[in-house]
Length: 258
Image (cartoon, rainbow, N blue to C red; front, side, top):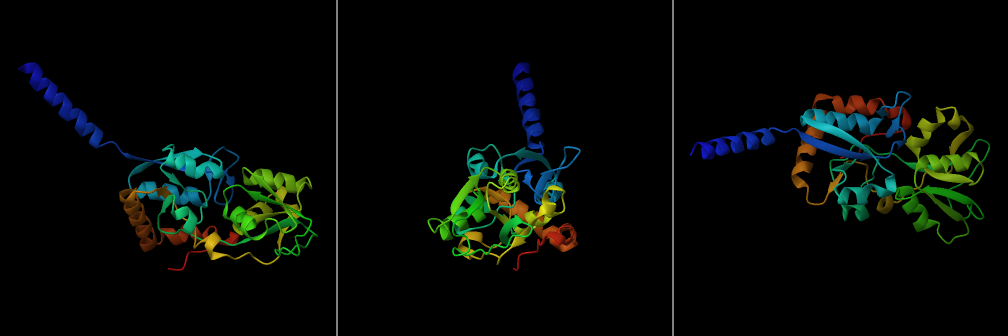
């Protein structure tokens, strides 16, 4: 009888302990994408997504875990349950909504062509005839290039991440790379980026670029979405959201119009 009572008490204590375990949020990030996320000289993850992610964890009394991934592997990693969310400058598009449950939009930014200084290049198929253009796999810039430029006289070269595209641009292996404008402006403030600039008209296609970027969750994780949306709402209410976004305004990151 005593053994049964002890077993029951032990079980109750165990269940109670597990019930008090903190929520853990595993964010998937591609740290080659400043000012969204990158690694500083001390080896720490920094950027607007890192700030937003940490603040969301703080408000949910959750523990943040940051998982480094290549951007093109973000959705597969999410669906394989290797991460709980994608917080890596991911734009909200109709195509991605079929695979990802998005939270409240956090910010938006445009896309333009990055080339060496002294070079001018428009973002039209006519201007790009005979050129080699770099794109990052899985990005909205790649989706735009494949939709509007594929088979129209230019060569499109795909890269696993943004750093590799920029390296080949510096080496002259490609003529330009279609870039998120915020990431490009951040890059220009570094020694490696001082030799480049943005050129041409910003590319526009709501079907491709969607309406802002946010945290992407698994389809069906509606309870987690509600919690995160609540945290974002409270950040907007007390001014924390604006304070974070203002620190990145110099890169052209702006709030999404509601």
